[in-house]
Length: 275
Image (cartoon, rainbow, N blue to C red; front, side, top):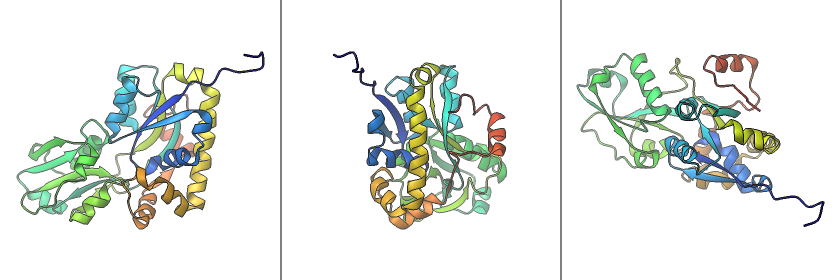
């Protein structure tokens, strides 16, 4: 080894799941942008699974909502959000085989959701906003891949908490959207990338480059939607191009957050050590 040679960078891994808001990461992977930083993606079927992989050290970094952030931080106090990605604007939703009015009159409702995720908070906000009785609910914990395979029936009241792209298959089967993060006003769902203080400290320069790559990917996704769709659809349950375009409208990119949004996030301690 010569005096001028350098040790290769240690591979960093990011655990993430199929969600339209994480498309910039999928796009960056397919364009080779992550390879240049020796960053690898591990894709999972749920928010909870991504967080679990991080906690058992199968990944160095994870994507998350504030729910996963709080869950991980309880175990690892130095864990923090470092890069903001998107805000859900209808991308997380409640589907059902009944109207809200019919659910209010139902004696029993079966609810399918990822219990250990932001799904739970969305459902609780929905129950509160529409004055439903939580005692009527039977909660069934499934990941989104399993939830997407639930068959439509009119027999008994069914409620599903899901998000894009998994909603597409359920809508085709007959379920209807009855609420989403666009109209449930007391819940703000924010997606970010998080890691611990040690990983941030040891890789600050590389993570700053990752932030630039995410910014670049978001810009290219907006400028070339067809190419972005072609490159990323395999990460998004192979939804159609029209479903992809519709799903993109259900998120707002916050990689350049406004001062007002940052003020809101400070109230939930979600902005510490952001790059």
